[in-house]
Image (cartoon, rainbow, N blue to C red; front, side, top):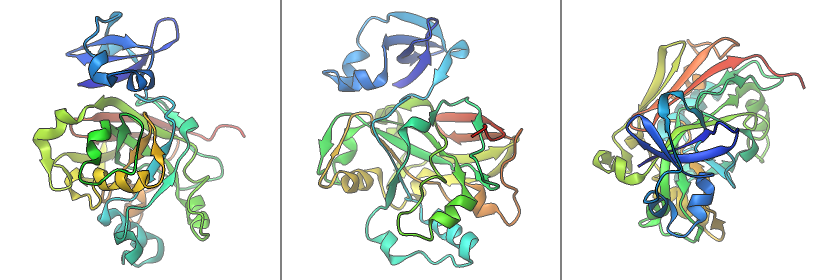
Length: 296
């Protein structure tokens, strides 16, 4: 199944299942359906409250206000490339191989799949990131990596918009990224249930392309199955000693060459007027126009 959230004619947030070129509306919001008895599978059996045209619907982020957002760095090629770009050394720290590392991002900064993206204040190096993310199906804790993926409701395209110059300063201290990452995070357009992706299963991920484009020019990307840390391993680590909530988002971090930071020796960072497309095979694409910083 492919789920979407959209803006109803009355301005309310609604969600539904995509059938061909239409949306069968089945609830006020995906988070409410995840929390309800039977989850998304039970909701999908209901008669739709309305049927709307997918092409003309105002799509929102599938999970407009997630309870929590964790962003990992699960692709080795990205970590090596980013280190080479930042300090001239592509050696990956041994700590990265011990367990999947993540930081908490800002649930209040979620943007839809076609929203404009203002450049964050006080940055000259504005960047995109080509990522995938999992949405948690129900409350769970202390998961085992081998079985943790059964707690995933679905996957979606994730773009963590990043201020690289601010990040370079922040990462000099032990807390990690903060203001360099909390201005905007784009999600969507679909929440795709895991069964839809099973034919593409490969190694620790799926044999699906992940690519970034600026002004319709392909900048870089790779394949989901290059991932070093599986989503099962990420969920197991994130849930150790705590509870993941229904609707929580766990993102992979960029695929190798899935951001301008890795390409900055020959690619310029984003500027107002640029258009960015973040595309993951079978999950759809985020389409964003970059605008100038909003007044503080």
